Amino acid sequence: MNGPVVVIGAGVAGLAAALKLHEAGREVTVLEAGSEPGGAIRTILRNGFLLEAGPDSFITTKPEAVALCRRLGLEGELIGVNGEHRRSFIARGPRLYPTPEGFYLLAPSRWKPFLTTPLLSPLGKLRAALDLVLPARRGGGDETLASFVRRRFGREALERLAQPMVAGIYTADAEQLSLQSTFPEFLKMEAEHRSVIVALRARASQTPGTETASGPRYGLFATLRGGLSTLVQAMVGQLPSGTIRPGVQVTDVSRTGEGWTVVRAGAAPIAASAVVLAVPAPVAGRLLGSTDPLLSGELGAIPYASPATVNLAYQRVHVRHPLDGFGFVVPAIEGRMLLACTFSSVKFAGRAPAGTVLLRAFLGGALHPDTDRLSDADLAGMAHEELKGYLTLQGEPLFAEIRRHPASMPQYHLGHLDRVARITARVGAVPGLALAGNAYGGIGLPDCIRSGEVAATAILSA
Image (cartoon, rainbow, N blue to C red):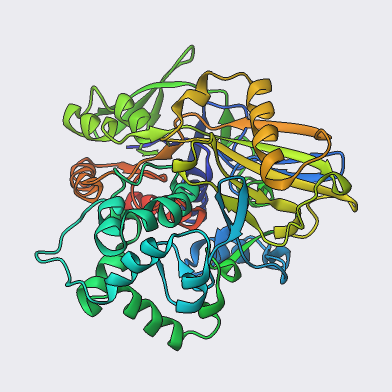
């Protein structure tokens, strides 16, 4: 059938699909419900500050983001995190304590920092050390992240260390989160080494530098000097003028003969040769309701959370904390609304004028859905008040920039991989249809780029 390939959604996954299709010589039309492309990515310049309203970086061990930057001529704009203060903190009570060196997401790889941290009680440390003698679980298979950590390291290690670190990534409930879908390497460590600690120590001995890491492996993260919107602008610049049509609400996509009909609100339908749905899974499900009710139901069953970011700027003299790290996370057991905070002006160069500080607070997510009902002023005030206690703030913020991300973070619950396998099989049986986005194979920027490029490849090879 003649007609363009219609990509619905102009986030980074949709743009990656459109770019690959265009490079292959296919006519592409990108329909975006919002006012501009980029999805969750939004860099804001304000009063000399560079704010990221969405993601602020990407991991370089997954090659797709770096490779795309190179293709777009942005390699010279890539920057890593600052060389100093490569550590993070975890809140306990009113104070912040360094994440023990060598602690990797769920478990320790070094004994001295772990045994001396005030984040766990002596009994909590002893229980975590039982990982060294506990047998591996029989039968294998998936389990929740909370179940795994409790089983291997105990309740206290889960509540005080693992849960806040994972919530800072997925804004998720560890009691629901699938370990196989998020951190499968830990299941593999248990299966191959029995003890996760033994496996981590073996890996640290083979990889110089990892044994001194504190929390996330910061040396593996990168961003763009001018912010991540630079990547979006470069991708858009490679597409012909008029390819991206913002402010277009799609209400239905249906199979018509050998092609597709894309129905738009208040406008004539578009006849398409193929369709890439680069939108949240429940939105894709609604659009496919008339074409494949079973696929529609599977997509709609993927739950989402709604985080929010609050960027706050301060005079440096009003922040008593030394900010000798890249940020901190807050355990749910603390009963706070704050999930985490990034010290943006410490983490990356060029984010704040001299004599000032830029902080980025994270709120909402699966454990705090009530933040959806708060006004912007209340969100900003709550973020300031909670940061005030942890960082000893002695002045009001210069400004606060709030950005909500409704239903943007898919929750990889137990059974997620099986559901994705069923969705993939179902989509593969429908000619000219592909899905892309963060709901299927990873939530990071490289994952989204890969999903868009894989979707384009599927259309090109059909």
